[in-house]
Image (cartoon, rainbow, N blue to C red; front, side):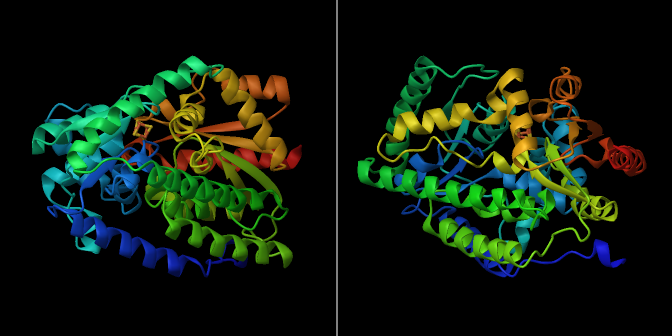
Length: 409
Ligand code: SF4
């Protein structure tokens, strides 16, 4: 391997693996355990309410990512397709359902199967697929499914939007209290929101350390390091981890230690990761001296609106401010701001076959970014899990051609 493509591992990652091991052990203990109820939650669903009510919280999108990263997603997917779930709907969902039906999952590494919960809780702020996904399991296990039907494609977020979502969250509490067998304690909810906000601030500081030139981390590192922000949001463990990781990033910046040696180009990644090709992508960009320093995806676990003094309204606002829930205008401005903030040369759009919700090159965004802000971009086609939708040769050619163009500029 040429020296410029060698990846520098983070020391902190060892602690992250321990934390994840402890987390999955808690999920395993909660299965069928009456004193600790288990809830499934969408990745940006109301996890703080669940934690405050004493639920252990499991995030199936994380399982989808594990299936993708381990390249086991395509093994089970045909079983979900055979049940009538189209090849065009979310491959996190079809690979997760497929793994469940075939009884084969990377969760086995933690001594788990797909864990049967006491309730499944969604928020459709990201897409409708999550509700359909949870309803499959609701029918399969005869378990209650509850959630928030949110707004999508929002330009301005008004007080009325926030009120509508906050009220749904408050109504959800009544149903969840019954399942948990306890009342929601206001101080526990405040504490969960406070910890989520602290986790979000620390995660943001980690990601924004990549504004430094050269960047101490890449998007590909971020997709690994984000695990505690996803599955442990609202816990002290997640905050402690990001304090440790941030110190390491600051140490790299102080010593001028780059994630990509000889960093010459700096890029933004928009859309889902292609989990089964992460390592290959990290190498491909590094070979070109290109550091993918920032992304919409990793930033999606930054919740600036969370405020423990106003838990319901601030959770509602945070869920509405999510990039994926916004209209083209705010999305375009957001990407342009990121490009400026991180001193980036261009954008890589991943157009995911089964996640149109998080694919932003379909309605003229690349052209508008170029014409309005002078930001060049390239679009690659793929999928978060379904590797049949991805051509390594075509993507390599597109990426190499794009970096050459940047070099000529
Ligand atoms: S946002 Fe996309 S990847 Fe995530 S659950 Fe929805 S369709 Fe699947």
